Figure 1 (cartoon, rainbow, N blue to C red):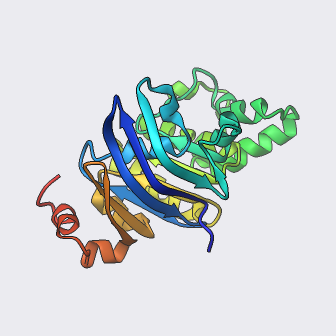
Figure 2 (cartoon, rainbow, N blue to C red):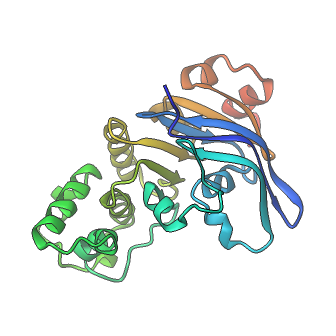
Length: 251
């Protein structure tokens, strides 16, 4: 099976200090790939490299390639705005726009040129249902999104990313700081979305990685230590450092 996106000997540097070192990692269709590791291991940096958000950071440079299909995403002819529509991103802290719930959802589709009201309503409903939020907000779509709870805002951000129909979802600790009920709803949504999207989940919660992912990659000090089926990573990893991390000996 051809990967949706893959890195080949990819390294990233901040002011000449290496933050990622020769990462070779692939994401396949219809899978959830979890990335785990202690703080400052390069997890979030790698995620941001996948849709070129690190371009915005002064002093960042890279070596190697990241291929989305057959296209090098750092190639000179790549349209970065279009790339970010193909590779949606959800952050640890939900960032709802200071608009209504409905306007949050249709913001991206409108930028794509969709103006038909009926189509926008269909997109909003479909996205909210996919993020397991529709039943909670369907009667108040005109309310401010800022009135939603933290867990609801995070699911709204997932729905907003889905509204532009990406091929890949990147989630950077989406359940950080959320209560167990909100976390369970997001995990349920991710399991359902797997049939349509390839997803990378960066998480500091190793139990979450064990619950929802198909494969797990372990990062440490900017290096990919190993990547394998999640059951293997948590029961019989090939590297002692991985075993020490998932069993709580450090991190």
